[in-house]
Image 1 (cartoon, rainbow, N blue to C red):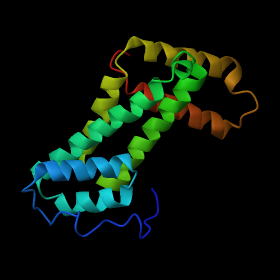
Image 2 (cartoon, helix red, strand yellow; image 1 turned 90 degrees about the vertical axis):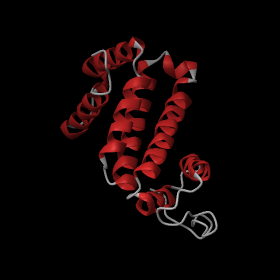
Image 3 (cartoon, rainbow, N blue to C red; image 1 turned 45 degrees about the vertical axis):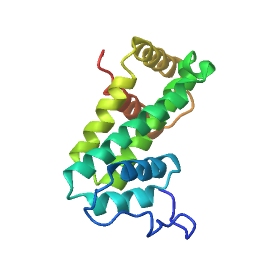
Image 4 (cartoon, rainbow, N blue to C red; image 1 turned 90 degrees about the horizontal axis):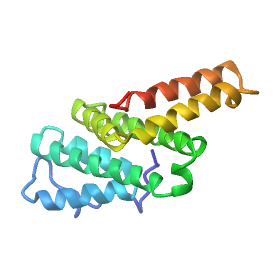
Length: 171
């Protein structure tokens, strides 16, 4: 997570009051901006402020889902990456790690956010092309990709692959 600096500190004017969601559109806009600008410390503080409000938590969760879709789309819009499993799968693994870290660091692994993370990634990767790419990537790793790597590096890569595999509905 990025360190908070005075320039990134949440404005008391923009920061909603505790449990006050009189203006859900404003909260949605502010939280979306926090995701898009990677102001994760502000996001964590906002979540903690609204944690006791189911309506606010649901709004933040919806913003998280939109952020996941945007991050996924940012990766797959590059046609060179999508067609090459050696480039695509590490990108998807890194995305999964990023989202898992956000779920833990900003939202304390609250179930609504864990579910949003898992379900949205599963939806994004529902096209069989991604399962095929993962298969090709595993094949590459087993034939050439592990050459010169330590056992720990191999184990970490395999764990990352399994973690990504769990996101596929069509496994």
